[in-house]
Image (cartoon, rainbow, N blue to C red; front, top):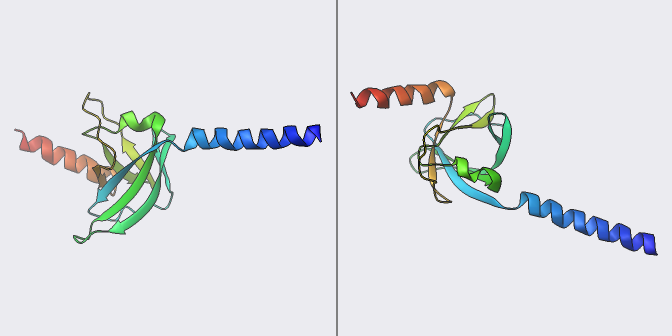
Length: 130
């Protein structure tokens, strides 16, 4: 009886600890003009899993909108100049090197169907500044 009680207590504690580690998340929306063809639901930054894709829908303007959840340990990476891009069927975070403001939860963030499209977008915007 004593062993059974300890086992049950350990299972319950393990469950609650596991829930506590993975439940705090921040939710955002990533908007794509082109379909990124992402099949992996995990989101990565520098090879580390930082979140998951929860849902996708098509807007009235035919833009793909992904609902994502970012783990609380990584929500500081989501800033006003944060963008996401698709690569090898996964969604990747383009890490900002500047010190910009954090973005509130449930904000819309730009997404690009490839890293090439992201680079092209940045180049066009840089040329506009000249």
